[in-house]
Length: 164
Image (cartoon, rainbow, N blue to C red; front, side):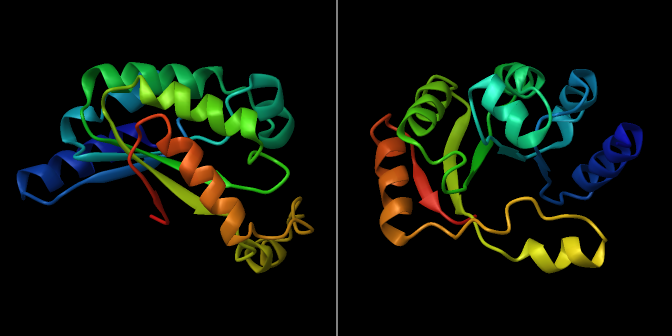
């Protein structure tokens, strides 16, 4: 939202030898994202759903920019960790997990995928902000559900861990 400030802050951190990381969903102006790459040690890049129509239905926006930014970023930056929030009934189906595995396995700069099991910690935060938490009825995934996702992603030769 404030790319000039972010670039300045990151540059100053690098000048002081402070390790830098940027967490992003990738839904940002490409020039702004790519303009930070000289000052970032690690990108934590959220990837939720590959299918554009399904992504738009659950997030309200297309994922074309998100996927395009990831491809562009991977061409100029060597350290990207994908963060995959696993939400039962939303994005944990075999097709989506396989497509995420296939998509990220060909991006050489993806170091690992952090599988992040859905939790309900955000419900109270949304309530205090006066916002409706649209997925309050969803239950966190079981250990078995998470393990299926992990194994499927590993089958693509990816380094995968739970949490992040």
